[in-house]
Length: 195
Image (cartoon, rainbow, N blue to C red):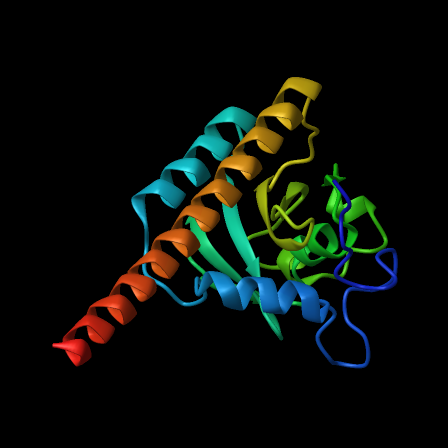
């Protein structure tokens, strides 16, 4: 599968001149899911809780790319619903399209001054896996993190990849169900006009 990066320079800083760093392909793909700002969903919440359990870390999120923020479809052990793209760790995952791990954010010059490290939630260890749709476009991330330094082992990384695949499957299922409902509504309207 070919992955379409969300930014032309995934190793650069997450924002570019204060504008969104997520590519238009990602933003269009997210718009097609119509997922932003929707209510809690038990299926997503279950996968998020499973990510925390699998990694044995207290916090987890399923994040979705938006123009100026990373929005959390689900979170475990975290009270917020979004993070600005310029401070979100998930921005790095979404931009690179690859697994991304920071073992100790306080010792990493890219993150030591980040408000999510120096303040709440006090992130030290972060690990995130991109959510890549069937067209190879990154639309978000599933991530786990802790206020203690650490690292995921290979089995935990593999499990996080499997959970990322399940999140994308749920997004695709929701999109397909919506398209079928819209088609059925149009067909019903067309039938009424013929009568």
